[in-house]
Image 1 (tube, rainbow, N blue to C red):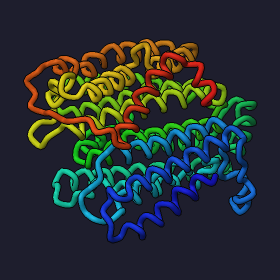
Image 2 (image 1 turned 180 degrees about the vertical axis):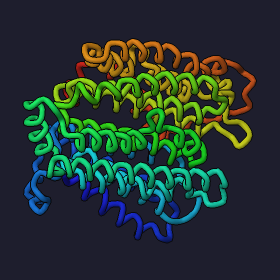
Image 3 (image 1 turned 180 degrees about the horizontal axis):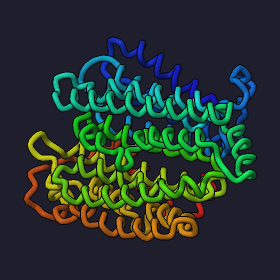
Image 4 (image 1 turned 30 degrees about the vertical axis):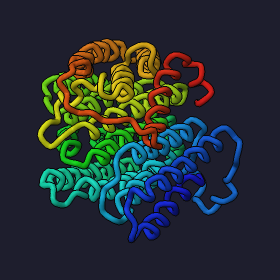
Length: 460
């Protein structure tokens, strides 16, 4: 896929061009490169362009993007563009932070297209290693150093578990290609029993991926890492890692369709516990950023429901949910970064902005309604489609997810209690820069796609 080349070589060029330039001077160029990559992926998915001839050197079958996977890859790239465009640049010279984010994005794209366990492993590492550095990129911040160390240790731990599981899968099937694993499992299903190596390997590989998407009980690193990392890196981890992780997980499980009933027996309780624990723990948080971290955990629980249904037939459902989650979370992280201070990181930072900055208040309301799944936004469409598709195979899991969604309203709506208070001393003015154009576009997208869901059929 040509987008991987565009992002990689674009990051490499920015890294050298920006050696002696301030980051803000080249931030728009980075966003433009990512926008170009996203457009190229989307054009490929619709058959407008075909660049397969340029990638004949790629080993056959190791990396394959079906049309829906291409759209999810486009979403991943556009979300990275939105994060880079919305979040403020650092004041020092050098493009190392944005370049590392773009290198990490290349790993996410590899994960989505992986059809081989080695490619999936490489994608995970390319995604994760730059983030180990980025989490502690503010070297004088002790909490950032703690976040970097925790993320590195947990990343190394989950990678070891994943590799052990991949070894077992290879030992049980004699191959690392997804389609060949599927073929061998189909034969095993015919004889009524799956090899113990395959069962153990799938559990261990799943645990490695569940660490990456911060599902309970493998979530414990997530709130501390998100809170200690710089805001735009936390947003990048919450959105890009989550989208890439679940898209890759779904692609992997298409090779284990014969074992779906078996793995659903233990994945469904993990989904339910993740939804309830994420939402309940979010209720107790005073820090808005930490609340967003637990919100991200709860969304991992909802997304796990998708993995319990026939994946290939419903891949569009995953794409819609990831798009909804990404748009809403990006706006909330941006607004938190804009209004938070070193003394106040609670919902009190939004006090009175309905009067001082109505545009930001509107964006906050729309993004909150989206992540909460309230009608008239794309968030409602995403949750409705996900729960409807999962209900036949995971009825009680969907019912618990509905309970979790009801709980989430109580903490998502906390900022609404202070939006219309006038005690705020914050008096930001609106300057229609590229940042505000981006914010307006994202906000309108959440509403338009929620009111006219037929547009989603054109996207996917």
